[in-house]
Image 1 (cartoon, rainbow, N blue to C red):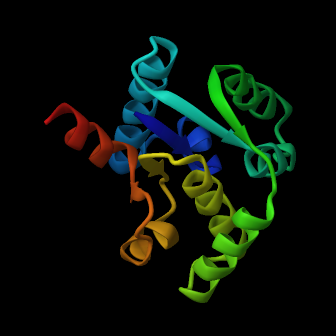
Image 2: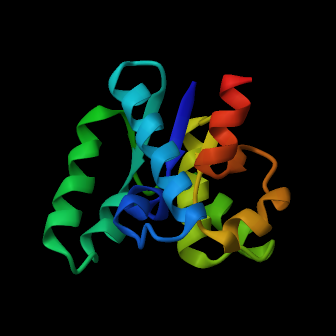
Length: 144
C-alpha cells in the first residue's frame, strides 16, 4: 500500500499536544511512520514536500522531516500531468499548495493521502483518485 503524508502530517508531533485531537493524530502518525520503517507501507515523497518543508523556520524540525525522504519508494517531481491534476483540484476549491500535494499523490498512484489539514479534509469528497483522510481514520480503516 502506497501512502502520501502531507507536510501538516509530518509536522503534527511538533504541534501543541495539550489538545486531544492533536495528540491522537500525532500518535497515529508516529505509528504509521513505524509501519513505513518496517516496510508495511510504501511512502511517497514529492518536490512539494521538499519545497514546503524547506520553508519551515525551525531548523531541527526541517531536518527531522527531511530525513523521511530516505524511506520513500518514490519521489514525484513536477510534471505536466501533476500540474494538470492540480489545476483540476484547484477548480474544485482545494487550495493551490494542497492541490499540488494531492496531485503528486495521485500521479504516484498512492492509495491514501494523509493530512491533518481541515481545509483538505472538508473537501476530500471532491477528490476521487486517492483516498484522503487523517492519520486516525487511516489507522481505523487499515486495522479494521
